[in-house]
Image (tube, rainbow, N blue to C red; front, side, top):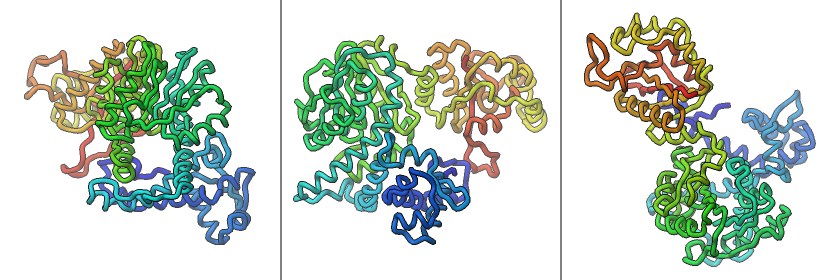
Length: 516
C-alpha cells in the first residue's frame, strides 16, 4: 500500500495527507508490537493459524486475528485461508538470528518514542530537555549502550552492502580508520570484501567494548585494533596514513564547528592515494527524512544537526581534497567521497547517470527521475491540442514549427535514457535551469544531450510575432510541442501530474533531458 505521508503531492489538496500524518503512529505501533512479541521469528518455521499464534504469544485469539489482518494489510504477513505466514520482506529482515535482521533498529525507534513526545518542550527550551539520570547505574547505562550499538549494527550492515560496489577492485593491502565506528559494521564489510585490509576502530571505550566482541563474532579477530577516544579531543585520531577513512553517520551527531574540526583531522590521516568516505543523511537526497532526523538530533543529542552534502564538500575541498558529487544510495542515506588525488576518484565504480542526477538536482529541481528513453510516450494526438486550444500555436518554437510526432519517435531511438526534471514557476527561471542541466550533461560527456521543456519558450520578454526566433541558441521546444504526452510519460516515471481545477492550484513543470 502507498502511505501518503511518505511523499506529499502539492497538487493533492484533499485532507487525506493530514489524516495520514496524524495516524502515522498506527503503522509504527503495529510494527513495534509484532517485532517485540517475536511474531515473525515464530512464523519463520512456517505458517500458523491465528489461534495457534495467539496461544504461543499469550494474546487473545479474537484480537490476534485482527492484529494479523493489519499486518497483512501492511505487507508484512500473507494469508492463505486461515493460515498466516511471513512475507519475503519480513522473513528477510524481521526474523531474529537472520543475517539481515533489523529488529534491534526498529525497537530502538520505539525507545526514542518517549523523547519525541517532549518535542514541544525541546522547542520551548531550544534543545534537548530529557537526559539520562546523572547517577545512572552502570548496568543500566551498559544496557542502553548495547541497545543502541545493536540497533546501529543492524542499519550499518545493510548500508555497507550498498557502499561496497562503489569500491569494487580498488583496494589490495591497506589500512582502514573507522571514525566513530560504533559496532564496526562498516569497517567489517570492507574487511570481509578485501581480505588484505586491516582496520582501526575509534570510539568511546564503552562502545568499543561491544564492538570488539561483535567483530570477533564475525571472524575478524586479528585484523582490527581498537583505539578508545572521545572524538572531540584534539588527539582522538591515531597517526596515519590510512588508505580509507570512514565517517559513517557521524556528521549529523555534532555541531557544525565540531564536525568541521573532525573532518579536518580525518583528512589529515589520509594517505596520498587514499579515500575519505562520508556516509550520512543529506537534505539533497531524502529531504523529508533528513529534516526529521535533524529534529531527532535536536531532541536526543547535545548539539547534533543534519548538514548538507554541499557543506561537507566545501569543508573537504577547503582542506585540499577532491570530492565526488553526492552519491545517493537506494535507501535514505548518501555518500560524499574525497581523495587527495583526483585520479583516485576515477577508479571508483560510480554510475555516470547517478552522478549527473546529483549535480542536476542541486540546480534547484524538486525531483529528477531517470527512465528509459523508450518509455517516453509519443502518440499522434498531442499536437492537435496545440493547434486547437493554445494561443501560442504558430510561435517560433511551437507547432507547426517543431518536430512532428513521427520525427520525435525516430529521434528517441537514438537515446537510451531520459531524465524527467520537475520544477515550478516562474517559467523563465525553470527554463534557465533546464538549459543549465543540459550544459551539465554535455560537460559530463553526454554529447547528444538534448532538452525539451514545459510550455512555450519564456526566455525573451516578448516572442517574435513574425520571422525567425531571436535566440535560437538557447530556445528549446516544449515536450508537448514535439508530440510527447507529458501526463503519461510522468506517470510511467512513477511521478504525478494533475490537471488544474483552479488558478490557485499548485503548478508543476516538467522537462525532459535525453541522454545517449
